[in-house]
Length: 433
Image (cartoon, rainbow, N blue to C red; front, side, top):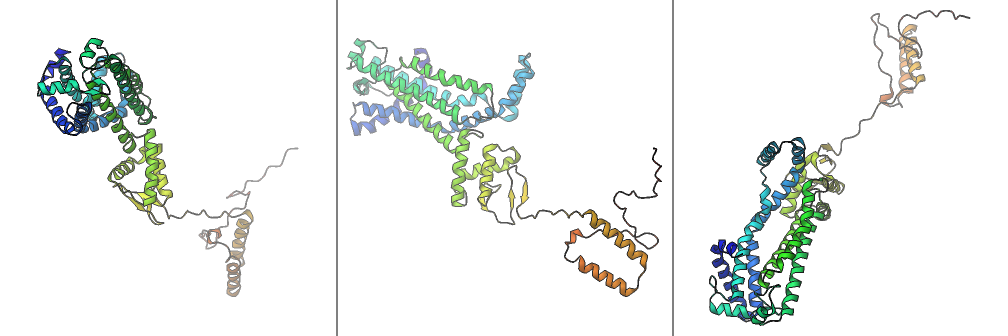
């Protein structure tokens, strides 16, 4: 471990300087030799580091979601080139390059935090061995060795013997109980953080080996913390426990406000967003407009929860716009259906013309033929036409028979009666008895 610590010695001095500055502030409040002053200094160091790592954490979320989206394509490549590992790797790298994803981005926060972890371990190990390190001089070293966190010295370990623990001014029982409780809390927080990610913030429509890998890590990480935790000083356990609690709270905030599409967290978020938007009649926050804009832009590619959200707005008389805003929709407005295609809300349904009955078609045909053959007087024709118009005035316009085609001879061509073919009729042959 000394070899690893020496590799990160360049950051030991800045870490020790930050701890000393926080110790000055808390020492003025709680006393310079108390566990509160030194313990809160370590907690403040964790918070400061994690605030600096927020941009990397955001990049980690984007990379993780991009990797989840690529899992179906990666599975196809693995099946297509399962006998050619080199070609499989080349196609994987090509897919990463085309989509702009990096599998190592999800490990960036842990990798960036590792130097601080080893530097802090080296500082606390120096306190335990009674050697000055960084900006911690002899007076600060003596003050840190007197500090106890709930009865356990800052530099004590679970594996320390009774003689070493007594030299630090504590009992072995207190050290074992405090370190055991902190290790259990550290492992439990890690397990809950990973479980929350798998059960709430994973797209349930995609079943890939990546999800199986994440489930395995959900159980591996807590065991690793429990095994390695017994060799960590109390100060390092405080650092790591604070880191896990911060990660858990940060992830809960992300899942609550910006969940993964297709996950259970997205269904709960869109349900809350529907109630909020329908109550106020608009999207009030910028984050809400960003999510609505992304949902509208998907069009037909929306998942089940997103289509339900759009339908809920339409039922409430609202319409989501392309810029993420929500406006009131009236009868003449063009609404958006669940599959993203526009449809007019006020377009009347097209009515099909009523079908004439057999008797209506026959009476119209016979009447037309009779009128054309009789050659009656003008008064009779006007009277007949008047009677016809009066008798059919109450019928709908669609029910009127179609105009008859004029024959070259000036008459009208009568329609073939029901059961009779057009053209010359073929004589029936006598039935054979």
